[in-house]
Length: 311
Ligand SMILES: [Zn+2]
Image (tube, rainbow, N blue to C red):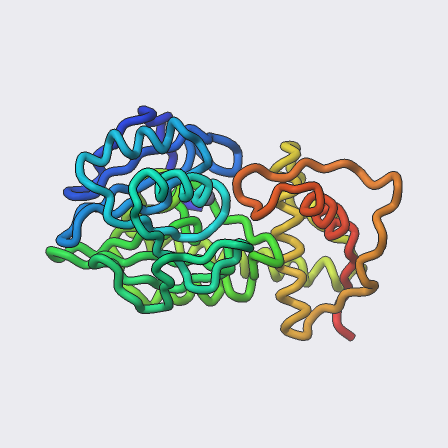
């Protein structure tokens, strides 16, 4: 896959990306978040917008306030995963700026001040509803002075493929949201993690092809035998890192549920009570909606779910 890498960027200061666009990379690096979450400062005719405030980190909020250089007029959110959403409350409290996000939030208890739907405009940016990685994911398109830029959030990232973790993540929606980007003519993506992505369609096409190959492999495996999510993920991914192991299971489950929705696979038995000797798994950092004990238990249960080919 034609991914990009970057050296650890300077922390705590805005880095120039393009005229009128800077980013501050939050100090939350991990196997799931790369060098950290990109918080973008976007200047426009309607003042300064902050896109994705980042994780719940007081220092990061201070860095945004210190680096802004102008009043922050609004806060934009690509999605409500905690590595993007965590700093919203503190930044909103410090600035009084309204929060613009997808109108049906996937985060319980959060309602955006400026609810956005597909195609809505906010401060010169157009919201593009792109569910898949997250149920409430928006990309934001910027068209000015001949530039064709897409803030692609975690839907398409320059450094890695995205995790699709049900039920917030939905593989069928992810496919459609990738296809949707192929119909557009954006020339540069600025993503939620990692450096800027030029010629983005090349990677979008490759991401889609990668998932289609993975899906074909899963179907071939199901032709041989029935599989539990955990066993199939082990067979296909063989990740040693415990977080990546769980991420692989989430992606495999997402593929299987897509096949079930399409009538090509069936779930063999309903998820049962967790056996007492079920292996302990850690919650992946950053990218999972809730890292509470119940979410981890849900992921353990999901790992034991079994699927077979539709007869
Ligand atoms: Zn993220």
